[in-house]
Length: 257
Image (tube, rainbow, N blue to C red):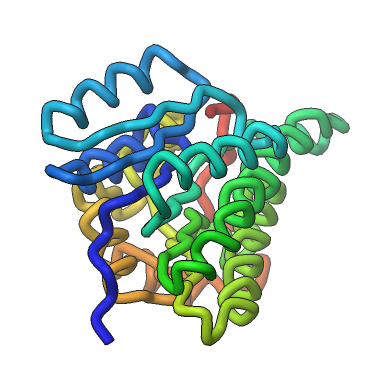
């Protein structure tokens, strides 16, 4: 049976980077797009741009780690759009490595956005999608989620959690017509990667959007890209820790959202 076209899309982390790129990709005549980010002014600017392409937008300025806010946003968008075809849980942060200094506050913040933010985003849409018998729940994980990397313990752990959650959710949804998946980018040239030294196989946002939208269309399960980083992933998961420490990029020097 053919899958319904993607017209009603809900995106977090929509104000820049991958989220903004995906919003522009799905903006066409008849599309209805929900946009979540903390920066209201950037959401308003994006909504105007989407409108110029014929898409209708709903903007929800706020924090994905706020469970009540996200539940209300999901309810409001589902009602406004008459359902939902794609939920793209993209909001995420990265932090400087300060674990040896005993710093845990930023780790808690990262987990709140990268993990709780994902569950806050996708779970409220499950009943509506199951009722309509279709839809895709897609969360952004990372190549770094396949293996813990030095200097990125919290980030790697958060992304592994995302991948595992979406895999388990997919099994819970079996037979409902709703698909759950994770996309695992390597290095993409976005504001979140600006302070990352020694990035390998960097791709731009447009290429990343093409990869992710293609994976969504194909209903992939856990999709790692670009292909060079997918191959690197196979090496990473097999290397002893002594070699992993040698090839891993240096830690972040500052926290980014």
